[in-house]
Image 1 (cartoon, rainbow, N blue to C red):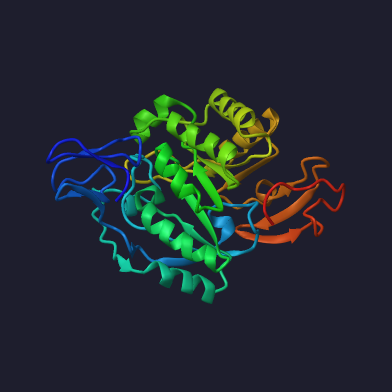
Image 2 (cartoon, rainbow, N blue to C red; image 1 turned 90 degrees about the horizontal axis):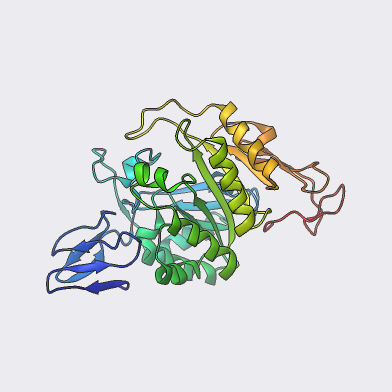
Length: 333
């Protein structure tokens, strides 16, 4: 395995993510996936999945990447984030008492299934693919040979060198921007914000990856007006005003017992982001046609209408331009 440094005869340091776990013999990293075995860090989950599912691409969520197409989704166990509000904690946390069956799938089998079921893409998701990136890369290499796209759903908590390698096999990604303060990340994710922002800038400046961002809103934690304004300003200044942003509703999970996020809070956050100048802002984990519709950034007429995860009407011409004013819609269609 790459991205490790031997510190002593018994201790090896993992260099994949900013945690830089120092592992003694037979010790697992924070992610519960990487382990020091005989002086080398290995992945204990390569080739093991928590199951395959065919999803609409809108579920990732990706709204501007081949709308209405199907993606074959899979993940493993473990995660390098420590989110106390994790919505998939039964897959990501060491202390989960829920027994999850792990099924072996070779990379070529996953690609074969995606092709058989006419999936436009394969999505690395559910837990954070950073912890199984070798597996994801091997799937990606084979997928691209079959003209199948790759999708990454991640928290973006990864170091520069493995990021450069991993992202070279990715066509589209949604990054979970958990909140817009170091304090929020430290208290609730046991992580830091800056590496995530660095990842976002890297994607924008150094790749052709289609990028969308999701923030899971938790009332009283990361929905402060000032925080939301600062987040929107940062996105515009560093990634551009055409960056797609999703605000998603939190549901009580894992070690957080707060009330589920109200639609009112989501709508407020969306309006703040629009007022700051972002062109494409959506609300997720609720069904609301108005806040899931794509509006032309020039004439503000509806150009992609959605009902839940299904695209119901597209008002774009063959060049992906608004049929009303001929302004191009940003994305890959």
